Amino acid sequence: MTLLAVERIKLFSTRSPYWCSALAIVMGIGLTAIFAAATDGPVPLGLTQIGSSQLAIAVVLVMAAIAVTTEYRFNTIRSTFLAVPNRTSALVAKTVVVAFIAGLLGEIIAFGSWGVAKVISPSSDLAINTSAEWRHVAGVGLVYAIGAVIAVAIGILVRQTAGAVAILLVWQMLAESLIGIIPKAGVKIQAWLPFINANHFLSMGSDSPEMGGTGVDFKLSEWGSLGYFAGVAVALLVVALVVAKRRDA
Amino acid sequence: MIEAIGLTKRYGRTVAVDDLSFTVQPGRVTGFLGPNGAGKSTTMRMILGLDRPTAGRVLIDGKPYTELSRPLRTVGALLDAKWVHPNRSARAHLRWLAKSNGLPNNRVDAVLEAVGLTGVAGKNAGGFSLGMSQRLGIAAALLGDPKVLLFDEPVNGLDPEGILWIRTFMQNLAAEGRTVLVSSHLLSEMALTASELVVIGKGKLITQSTTQEFIDRSTGNSVLVRSPQLFKLGPLLVDKGFTVRDGADGSFSVSGATSDQIGDIAAANGVVLHELSPQRGSLEEAFMQLTGDAVEYHAEIGK
Ligand SMILES: Nc1ncnc2c1ncn2[C@@H]1O[C@H](COP(=O)(O)OP(=O)(O)OP(=O)(O)O)[C@@H](O)[C@H]1O
Ligand SMILES: [Mg+2]
Image 1 (cartoon, rainbow over the protein chains, first blue to last red):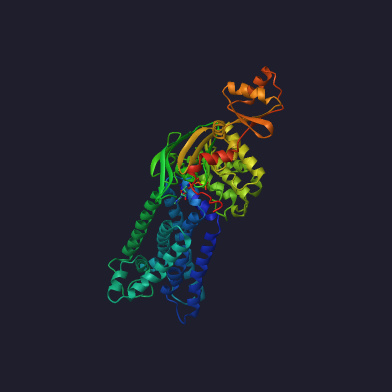
Image 2: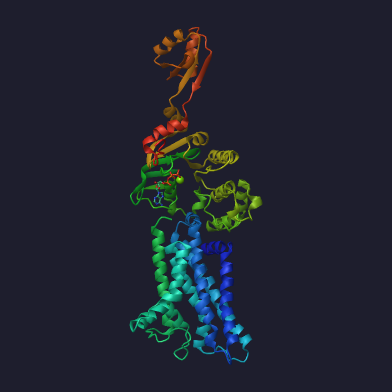
């Protein structure tokens, strides 16, 4: 509990988390506003979360990675390990705080996007009724939180901002969707890629292909995909913690 | 008390610290002396559990650092004043440190007061001068009111006033019964600060002794004698077993004797003295001689 408070003080006593949060909110909700305004006729629910799940998530991943890499950059990680020699607890506390904030941001952006679409297009049927619809909107926070764990793990492993950010952005925004280009094997591989599975979790079933999952033959249910995404995150974090424990600070 | 036993650290093929054993006792300032690259910082990082020793171990009051619960209450360290986030205020920096070791917030104010940073506590640490950063580092080290304190080259780059302040500060900490280990590559600085020395070169222990002993041993005391009756005094001193060398302007340089002894002998034999002054070789020279083979980077002068 103490360690969570420590990480909270650390995070909120610098400016970058505020900037990243503001940027993520503006980009996520802004994109939805543009889509909603440009749409003739009713706005489908599936359109409201493209900004949150495809664009703003990248900013949140960057924020999560930076929370770790700045500690390495300014050597405050050494001050941290001096104060808390149990590196695993110190880093787990940081991961929990960052993931919690990412999750909160996810919900703010998801429901903010939904709200802004409703304001711009009052006549659209944007009611959230089915469990798939709930998953589609409220699930964004879960995806952000788990994504943040991956970002923190990458940050711990790489230890420098430019490298960690490059890996995360290329991975999340490019690499996984590019693999789909490979004939035949591509979609089979994609069924096991973490961020594609995260999008599968957010999708509202086969009838609404706007949220990823196009043509991918998933072996898991939507919730199974989320579990798989979380499993990858935890595995990466465990590797990062073991490495951090063994190497010189 | 700090106790290093066979401490060794290798980075790839570089042996930074080589089978180093020493102890640091409470109640006095112990200087950790060695030329650049000798392994002082590496040793301190190992003492604090930041770097993992390749071999050997180091104990603080009988325990490795990593096994201390709430370590800031036992050990305070200033390894590098730049280990702060430049956009975080001095107070916030101390506040998270205090929180992590269950220290009350009034400790933060107390240490800020002690180092004279109260007025700038709300300012970002990135804007601090070197002297202010150093003070913030010391404030962080003092936060848990620890029994053991480590400072790595704390006076590097400071002005004379800052140097004097830190020196007095460390001596006061030791006088309160704390264990204080402070590293430096300057013997002249250590001579003024520390009463005990651990001297290393190329990662190996050269000697551990009191500062006085080390200086006496390495500089070889001599006494300069001027007298119109040197012809009479010389043989008397030689008879006593002292070494007498001719100096400039008809003076003598006597080694092995104190000025008291020479004065007594002169008086007892009715010899007139015009000058009797103890001479001390340059500390830096002596140090270089001692660590001569143990300097990591030789300056290639005149080549
Ligand atoms: N992380 C590291 N990786 C590789 N080599 C290192 C590392 N840290 C220190 N060294 C090497 O170990 C040796 C000792 O370095 P160290 O910094 O401990 O010396 P020092 O006595 O503190 O020197 P200075 O007076 O310059 O601060 C040097 O040869 C240095 O290059
Ligand atoms: Mg050093």
